[in-house]
Length: 94
Image 1 (cartoon, rainbow, N blue to C red):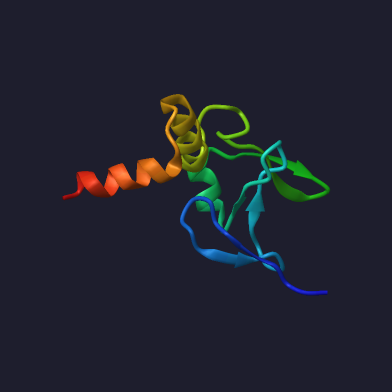
Image 2: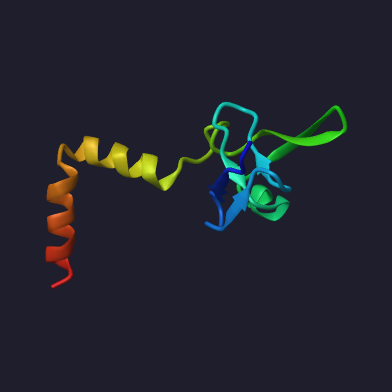
């Protein structure tokens, strides 16, 4: 039995699954390293068997979307490939 490490979706810090952390038990299963980060993500807490659980967050309530999902959506709406977008981005920096 080992320890898995995850990256906090709010601050980017890594945290182990053997310590205190928060994860959304709604549909997204996003994880956070602290209650403060979970709060920033709009977590709503509930209780089960004496444990505080995140029952939903702004992502599974469809109040916000992760940047990566928005980027994928924008690329498909623009009908452009990621490779072309990267080239155009670096061209715009010159």
